[in-house]
Image 1 (tube, rainbow, N blue to C red):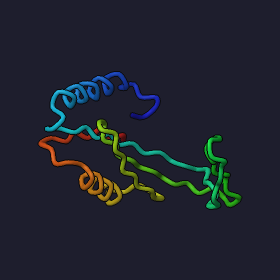
Image 2 (cartoon, one colour):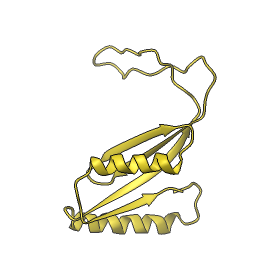
Image 3 (cartoon, rainbow, N blue to C red):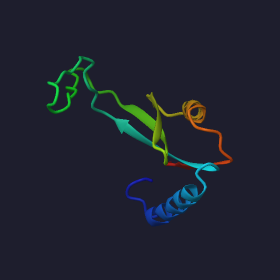
Image 4 (cartoon, one colour):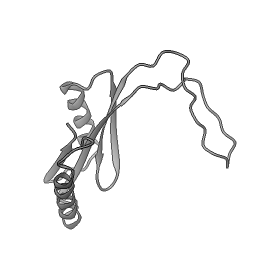
Length: 118
């Protein structure tokens, strides 16, 4: 869902109905949610370490110029499984590969509803 989106409430209602149906028939259907984001701040490729038991290691920002990168992910609503693709532009072939990967890692079901952010 795009922000701000005047249709947010309607979209949420549709997703809630699909998730309720999926809860009733978990072996017969899956709900897959797809979203994309643009990343501008690139992390450095250097390794980051942290002491065991301390805060997580954090990636430092790269000293090189930032490059816009698109990341698209398809998440199975329940159980939570994620497939990710990264590219300079998200094209139809990129989405096709993402969905192919998603299908390969998901069980065969009678129905698969996909919510795709446009």
